[in-house]
Structure formats: structure tokens, C-alpha cells
Image 1 (cartoon, rainbow, N blue to C red):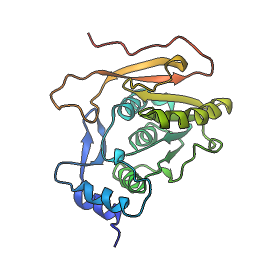
Image 2 (image 1 turned 180 degrees about the vertical axis):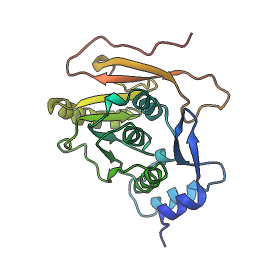
Image 3 (image 1 turned 135 degrees about the vertical axis):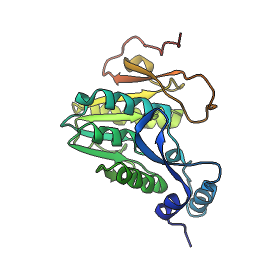
Image 4 (image 1 turned 180 degrees about the horizontal axis):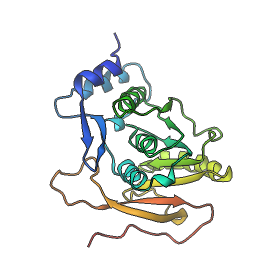
Length: 229
């Protein structure tokens, strides 16, 4: 029998504050969570199993969430899409900061379950879209928040046409990223920087700055992340 992801997550993962954002709690994997069982259970029925990105806080989402919480006017009374939502950290921050409606797009069924649990644990309402929305027109929103969506060349190539359609529809796009290789740097304007941990870094590692960018319609000079002093 296929595992129920909601029941598995509640029984085996820990609901803990995000290291860089103690206002938000997420169900997070730990060494004894047995997450492999849930992933391998999906492998048995899927041609394209999804890595469990949703089980951890990544720097791009964390930096966007931090920015939104510190600048609630960015989302206040606006309709917001959390694109590639994963754990839902960005959408949760937007809802807490006063967005009138938050949608979250996440294609991993386990991620969808985690997202729903995380939203409930943080006392916010999020409309979850469990299908790939990037091949169609953008939903009716005012702002797209895209954290960690340029981690690979393939996903970056899929994301950019959708994000361009968002811009063409008059939708603002903010990107959160620690400076990964496939960022469309010539299209980005630096908005803010914060030092937040990223998944996979050693706990005692010095934090590097991650950034919030605004995606522009016109080509512009790249604005790299400045190194920490």
C-alpha cells in the first residue's frame, strides 16, 4: 500500500522554526525521519520521482520570506503566487505579511502534503496548485515570488518563458537565490541581501549573503551578489 504523505510527515518529521525566520515553523527532515521510505515509495509508481526539496529550508526561499516579513508593504492586499513553493515558506510569509490571497504551485505530491501541513501549522490559508502551471498563462495574481527556481539548467529554461509571460501580463516578479549558476543575471536588479543558511551547508559554516532580485523585462547589467566583508 502506498504511504500517505500527510500521515508520514506528521509522524516522522519535526515541526521546527526555520533557522533564519523564527516566525515560521516547517515540518523538516532530520537524520532519523526515514524520509527515504517516502521517496522510494513514490519511485515505485512514478517515472520521474521528485527529490524531496520540500523537506528542507533553502536559501532562496528563506531570503524571499525574510524580505517579505520585513517589508510587508510588498504583499499587503495583493494576490501572490509562490512559484515552485516546496515547503511553502515564501507563501506562508506572504500570508503572514498581509497578502489578500496566496497561491502556491508545487508539483511534488509529497511537497503538496507538506505545504498544506505547514500552512495549517502557521495559521495561514494558501490555495495549493499541484500541477505544473509553467506551460500555461499565469494565474490572476499581482506578484510572483520565485525562490530557488534556477538550481538547474533544465528548470531554468522552463521557468523563464513563464516568468516572461507574467511580466507581459503586468505581474511583478521577485526572485530569491544564493547565486546559483543558472540565474538570468542580466535580467535581474538587486533589491536586498540577507545572510541565511542554505541546505547542505555545515552548521558551523559562516553564512554567505543570498539575494532578492526583481526580474526585469529589458536586458540590463548583471548585479552580482556582493561577498561578505
